[in-house]
Image (cartoon, helix red, strand yellow):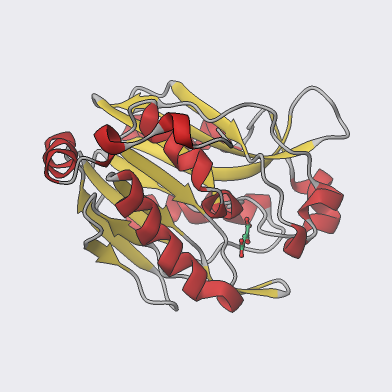
Length: 265
Ligand SMILES: O=C(O)CCC(=O)C(=O)O
């Protein structure tokens, strides 16, 4: 499965401009023949949290319709980052990731469960109530988590034990903690022996500066492609379930686990 990760600057607090930006990126980059395209976190609004009700999608719309059209036009699966999203309760805005397959079907939705105190998320957003689950893309078992979730290895192990061989991390990760991002992305790949495909935004957006450094890391911790901390970039990589199986045979940590000894699980 071939993957392209789009690292670009999200527009602060402007849903229409962000929808147009994504359409323009699909037109500009040569995405035909790609199996999966990945977008960052909160790509319809960025962190304009004080006005987040105003920018929020409703049951993912209008972002979902735009992504469905692009998926069908370019014949590509889209891991559509996350958007500010109202569901049934008009007072609860979630940070919701979604995935559309090449036929235009919604194959997965996940709302961020760990809200970020450092960005005041708990004051403005509601925490997702669903556990992480896997989904299939072109025969590959995948998972997705959102930004701050990267700090919780339990989620990655949960997805790995459910059979995921690729995990997407969609983010707006601040520059101030760039080294944590770089280290944790690689660690999550090594400790779970799977692909991590991490998409971040970059530059100053509103009051924060973001780290860039989108990455595709393989199941042995090797770098497949990486972006700089500034500037737009398109990362390219290929994920392969056979490679995951090979690494897990060489270093069989899943066979060596001692579940009875981990009293916190
Ligand atoms: O954990 C961090 O340092 C950053 C998390 C974050 O910015 C986010 O989840 O949006």
